[in-house]
Image (tube, rainbow, N blue to C red; front, side, top):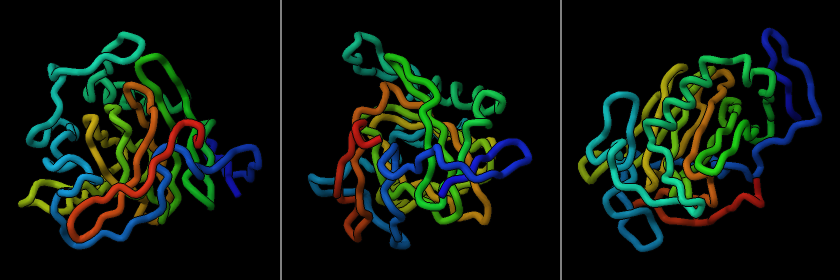
Length: 228
């Protein structure tokens, strides 16, 4: 079952699909109180997922900067930087007339819709009901950014050996940006729905899902665009 979310109204809709396989769609993961960065060959790089994050205006140690070296896409264009992607989602969030009428709520899974796609980036709109979660996932080597346009979410990621599991509350208006190796779990632990805007560069080609175990993150599955 899904619901239309228009300004001031909620009405049933049968024309939309929930995110049963779309970007970041794995089920909820119960995380230990603390964990080390992944160390085995099936997990993310040994330096830890959080090293590639650029959060708000204060980058984490090792964050991807605008001047960092980048690979060239198959189309011959360099991917957009995390900061450029963050600017895209922030600007779009300030123009709700461009996306609010598309929003749906699904009681089965998170609902999603691709708003724009170009050779070097794409933009997604996602809604979250309380209890819905992505599970730990990467972005297939793409850089990315997202902002909470409505509501609030919680983000889990692994820091360095001294940090263990990091948990952040992401309030409405907050933007997160990250590099190509970033792995996180995003979930709605609040009492109301949330709506987010996401941008990826290059456009997502695949995503891998992970399970958080005592020794770190272990890769468990992969999905591609044909599942979205």
